[in-house]
Length: 216
Image (cartoon, rainbow, N blue to C red; front, side, top):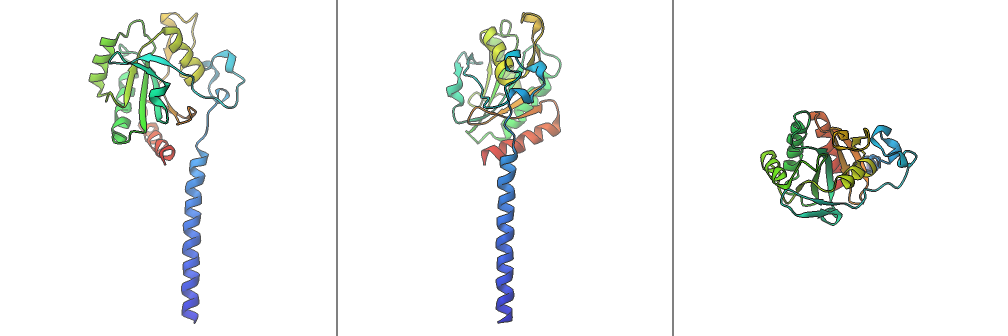
């Protein structure tokens, strides 16, 4: 009788512990933040959104990828994806960022729910042939990662009003594009869920961890 009571108590303890661990896991997922314009360094945010503190989602886009294919929000529907801004002639952080993005791509190479989007901040210069060459050099998998160009004004608005990844200088002319090294994590509802330094190994590990949280 005493032995049976002991076993019953052990069983209750195990069940409680399991429930607690599950709750912690659930709570970790809920703690992944949802970012709004007011959460960012305001130098990265269009002035019209400086006071916006809720319900931000990435706007629809219309871009051209490394294969000359039109890429829109529909290609990322129900996908978790990582976005960044770059230019093919960049000799600063861009090569490091591309290498790290390729590592994240490899981590999720078999998961169709995870995709990647790179937008050129010098679209007038980065032609489709240049994007194709760049994509090949960086190990881009066409079905997972779109390296894109498009109308300059459109890309500029996406950078300033959707992803908050480009500083504004002057009147938005060619030399006024100053991009950051940020990777932006977007969930299936088009909400920003994380911002990471694309040149930092520790940040890339954090990004992979957060993608797994969203994936689960």
